[in-house]
Image (cartoon, rainbow, N blue to C red):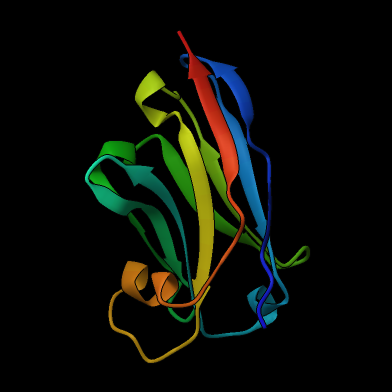
Amino acid sequence: EVRLVESGGGLVQTGGSLRLSCGSSVFAWDDYASAWFRPVPGKEREGVSCLNRMDQNTYDADFVKGRFTISIDNEKNTVNLQMDNLQSADTAVYYCAVGIGPVSGCFERAGAGSWGQGTQVTVSS
């Protein structure tokens, strides 16, 4: 069973920054998709940022482009989400996911795999 451990959430003021981290032994592999998701009304979750390990491509939702950056720390076996210029609309529980199965699409592949327990991000105005 794949275990994911998230950290880095917290309380920050509008315009501030946070760095989320997701640790797993899977991140030492060469082929996986890892993504961060958050809940939205009317949907189970929406994809925030995704990284495809094989080709190093990253994908960001339109609402975080230019503000959030997903990256791998190979030494620590973590996938991180650097969140800058945070807004109140970014307040949510953020979930890390990683997928290794034969699923098309970065977010789809990650979402079909294993999930972390979530970490709370609260942005105050």
